[in-house]
Image 1 (cartoon, rainbow, N blue to C red):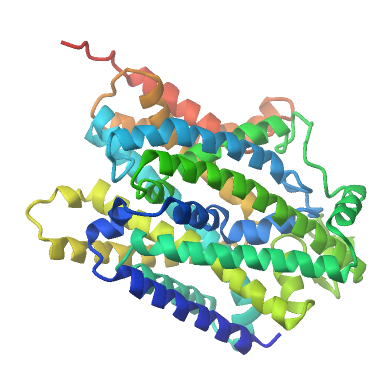
Image 2: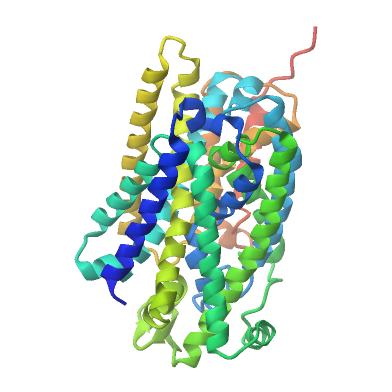
Length: 509
């Protein structure tokens, strides 16, 4: 497919985003940037958050993992185990965390830690969010940028670093002024285009294979693609691990994440914000099933067109070769869409992929800027600074995080991992665990913590212990492998550490 043609559609798409950003960002101030003046429409927030929750990782990795013979944890429809856990996690957010955030009227959710434990615990929580979101967002960004590079920009001789820098510049341009006020609308637009691309691809492949949805699912079942539940207790994909892990991942990566909650608390009323979260969980569950169905269809399509599994003598892993090219895993969907489907479908795929890329990046950049300004710099408490001076500081922080994003993306590029969804969940287990432990300790106990860096030390030690436990679990526990439950273990170790250094609750006068 002509790379210049594809690139022109990406450019046109970006121009549309700039127009939306200009219109929504007019007369925006710091309150608009941080929390959208607490006037966001809950329906727009709910729909836009689907794109943020899914990201380019879901768009590429989830379909690619359905028939992946390399042995990842989400082979077949096993990802639905995690999706069931998501429903439990979103219910917890709606009825436990959101009432807390609204009652305390928070702009940054980490202010809860300040009110509950003091300044150092508050800064520690905010710091772990910044690390978590930076790592997670740049990993997602890398995946999509790598797809664009491999299928479009390499053919035009453009270096990867230039591609990454230009895309980050594009994101900067439309989030610079409006922040949350803008991305509520741009995320809605992008989610619409992403889901449209998904549906179009599913319908086209079904028609091409002359199959109805029911027939296709029946064939997938015969080939083993439709397997959902894994009953091997020692496996990373064991169903109880996946469901419980999915619930805690949602609580940590959404409910304790400033990026995701920043949009929720920009809704005026608690009830509307709760409707947003519940609506999001139901629609997200359905969309994930559709992504998995697409994955099954892609494998049916490629095998019907001559793709065969072969063992790689060097890596010892099976590859799916189509015309001599390995298309297994993350390269499955883009390879088929851009090389084997009609040009119109390829264009729709690229627009949908870009639509999956931007929501996970623009929201992260905005949330990281907000958290650093509010939680680390204390910008909203600086009465000595004018609105103009605060804005200047905010813009500087915003630009700085874009540079940090570029550095992290280049690190992932050097690592060159072909299937990144497992890695993102592993990283989340290490970085979000301390946040889970801190909030759980605050909500479930009445004990106090010392206002000292010993709290920070506990939050740093817990991930290190988790790493050693994960690395040696197979030898220590008779073949048991730690998977998605790493987050829970890390959070529990943090909780125990905090309990050891805690003090009794102060008696009420």
